[in-house]
Structure formats: structure tokens, C-alpha cells
Image (cartoon, rainbow over all chains, first blue to last red):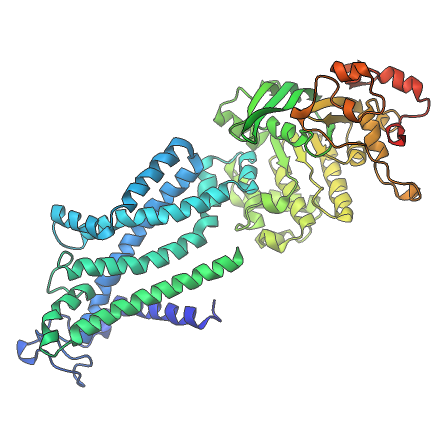
Length: 268
Length: 331
């Protein structure tokens, strides 16, 4: 893994973004919402490395602060859908029978609905903000994680070491937690990493449509939409910078996830 | 200790429910080692696994299995788990497949003990002692290692240590040395035998190696096509195998001292339990088969110190004046 330049580069990029998000107040040159309309839509300068938006706010600072919500949202989505998906998947693999059937059919039904539709329904019901889209997208990402983990867990379950655990007299929950879970952890990590990228795009799209967090909050998807009107006036820097960050982050997560998957395929 | 009473097992084979074990009645006394011998597919592993109810959910078990007088088939899941946790341990054929690859040897060994309420430290102490007993000296290092870092022989010793750790009363050994190379095999077997005797454990030892079984067991039960065909004291087996199949098995073993002789084989191929006709299960390959053997299935009956399922056992032994060893192979 360490000898793979793409894995190292994408991994470092992800790490850097996370560090930047965590230490945003120390790294950002300006507060995210400070600015004067008089200095709006400025280009790149020594004072404003990436220029300013139409309200005169420093774009670099907004990108840095924006990284927080733009990463927190997908992180929550992946955390929730991973925990729920893995629990259901291992339970389905373990019990099999009608439980597996019911869980798998519900997952099939969820597959039929794109995550964005879910998010829109949730926003229509519970209002805009971070919470409603995150919960809606968590539900729609759960089947993706569940499907992968379930098939891995079913494969593991059939292996002889599980029978050996039975014979040792271990209770089922313990075999699931201590034996099945560690054996599906690698595939789980890959799926979660890849899904993170997609969740980030979905959540940015929700914000772009104005259904997520609201202005003046700094968030990349929202920044793309806010910068839109200035593009025609010849000031594309806000949409461009925010869009670039979304693309780079998603690409980094996808590349890293694929490298993880490739490495795992070699091990298998 | 262990009693199998007319045990019969049905499995779904190729989409059809088929009986693979027929009316196997067998007892293992406290501290006694019984070898369960037969060719592949004879049903010896299934019999062994049925004892601890380790069969696919689709399997149905008839008859009764009793351990210390209690019916295993009547146990609810909690009782079954307690039985597995305290009274019965199993050693599997392929240790590499039966030990979780992503957890350390130490974790594997202490798990059953901590499950029984021991502290981790106490369990580790017990396990270190056991590893020494099975011939692993650098226990501390081994316990930090993962299964892939150990050789097959070492791993099988680890599994034996894990089986001994719960201080069981009955040991089920399903071909414990078959997957090992020959020198390791005898090492591991000698050790297992010594540990068993020292602790006075009862053992059901499943193997296809009749000589090995005879060396470490008190009695030998021979299975063929899902039927128990002979149950004899190990001491007399060599000199006086009762069933023609047992005699043929003994004769077909290659021997280093008789190199010039061509290897003798039992003609025909071993039958599956559901392929046998109405008569004796071995009739199609038996050198002594008569019309009666084809038509009527012999029941297991007491002959001398053992039991055998053969109509003609007395006649055959009268016919062949010399010890039976090798008789079936000469035609």
C-alpha cells in the first residue's frame, strides 16, 4: 500500500482535508462570514489567495470552513449506514431464512429509490438543514453497505472455523461480533470509503439545490450554487473553487477505496 | 459416557433426502478410546459430527445420542452450548480452516475459557501450560502470532490444546492427523494419545487409518456405506478381524517390509450409503459373498469379544485356518 503512489497521494489528500477541516479556525486567514460588499468578486490577490465572493468574503477561508460541513455530512451518512447496514447484514447472514428474506427484499425496494429523491422527501417533511438529508441519505446508503457485507458474511459463515466456534460452545452473538465481523471488516472498509465519495456528491447536490444547509453557512455544494450568478458576470472563482474541492475530494476517496479493494483482492 | 442408539442420519444429497447413516449403535465408556474407521464416504465423520449436533440444518437425526446419560437430541440450544462448552471438545481435520485466520492464537485459545467466566490472565496461564504439554515451548511468542504464521503440525497442536483447555470428558477427533505429513502425524498422534491417557478422557477417534486407530484406541468400530459392520477390541483386530471388510482393509495397507508384493486392493469401489441393495452392504465386493449375503442384510451380533454384521463370519474363520489378515485380497 505504501509503495503505491496513487494510494499514498489520495490517502494524504484525504488526511490533509480532514486536518484542514479540524483546524479551520487556525488555518483560515479570515472568518468565513466576514467581508464587505464593496470588495466583492475580487480576483486572486495577496490578501485573498483565491479572491472573494460576491459579498466580499474570502473564498479560501470559506473553502476551509466549508470543508467541515462538507465532510461531516457524508461522515455521518457513512457512519449511520455502516452501523445499521452491517448489523442487519450480519444478522441476515447469521439467521438466514425469513429474516434474511425480509431484510434483503426491503433493501431491494430501497435500491429502487435514488438517494436524492429520499432527501427531497425528507426535506419536504422535516425542513431544510443538515439533519433531514443526512438521515434520508443514510437510509438510502444502508442497502449498498448491507448487500456487500451480507454476501461476505454468508461466505464466512459457511467456513469451518465458524463450526469450530459452535463446538467451543460460544453463543451466536459472540461468534458474529468477534469472528464474523473482523473477517468482513476489510471489505466493509472498502465499501464505506467508496460510498463516502458518493455520499459527498449527493449531499453537495442537496445543498446546491438549496435543500440542505442554508446561507450564510459555508458549505461546498452551497458555494457552487451561490457563485453561479457571478459566473456570467465574469467571476467564476467561487463556483470553480468549491466545485474543484468537491471533485478532488470525491476522486481521492474513490481512488483510495479502489486501491484498498485491489489490495484486498490480492490478499484473497 | 457416549452412547449412540440406532443412530440414523438423513441428509439432502443432490436435492434428495437420503439416509447416509443407518442404525449405528455404539458406546464409548468413560476413559475409553474408540476408533471409528472406514473409507471416505462411509459416514464416520457424519457420525462424529452428529454426536455434537454439528450437521447442516436440513439434516434429520433418528435414534438417540446420549452423553453421560442425557439425550443430546433433546437438548435446547442453551443446554447444547453448555455441553459443548464443558463436556465435549472436538479436534478437526484441517486446523487451518477451523481457526479464525484474523485472530491471534492466544485469542483462539483463551476464548472458551473466558466464555466460562475465567479472567483473561488466568486463562492465559492455563493455556500456556497446555501449549507446553502439547509440545509448544515458546508459548508466549506463539500466542501473539496469527494462524498463517504457524505450520500445520503446530496449528494442530494448538487445536488439541484448545480442546484440552475446557477439560472435557469426551474428545471427538475427526481425522486429526490426516492433513499433516507423516512424521508430524506420528508426533501429534503420540502427544494426543499421551494427553488423553493422562487425563482419562474418552475419545471417539475418526480415521481412515486402521493401523493408527488400532495403535491408540481400545476398540475399533468399522463403518462401511453408512453401516457399522464391526466393533472389536483393538488388541485382537490384527490377529482376528471379524468382518471380511476389516480383513481386506488390513490387507490393502502398503507395508515397507513387504515391498516385493504387489499392493492388494479391495475390488470395486466403496458404495454410498444410499446405493446399497437389500443384502449385506459389502456383498458386492466381498470375496466370501453368497446368495444369502445378497438377499438378506446381516444384523450386528456378538461374536467372541466383538460385534460383527456378517452372516458367514464363523464359516469364513473356519475356512481360512490362518489369521484372516489378507484373505480378501488374494483373489
